[in-house]
Image 1 (tube, helix red, strand yellow):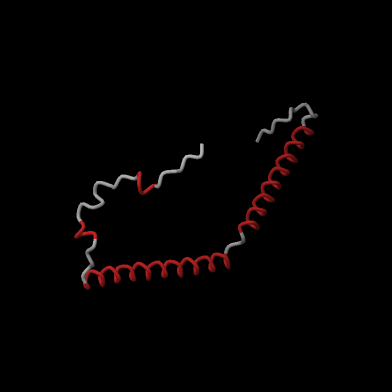
Image 2 (image 1 turned 135 degrees about the vertical axis):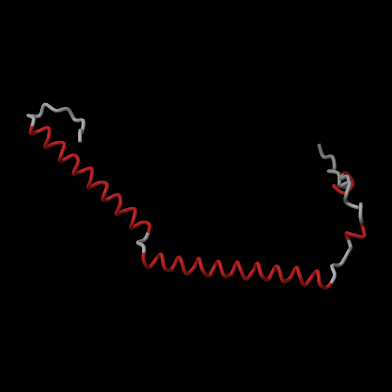
Length: 108
């Protein structure tokens, strides 16, 4: 029950490619390789910042022009409720005009 847990360093097996090419593993990139990598990273970062600025500007424009999502949803729900109330009123008018013999199914 109280057996000691073996140390992972004693039980782990090295990966087959782990020590296959030690020269490549310890290679320091040349100056022009590092410069090219840094340039690509700076371009990518500049693109990300430009996209974020454009998205922020678009969100501000949309917020100024378009109503809030909650307000829009409430407005659409209110319109749907009005449409249902009008349909019920028209249906009741048809049923009353025919002497109330019509069933409760709405027919346009």
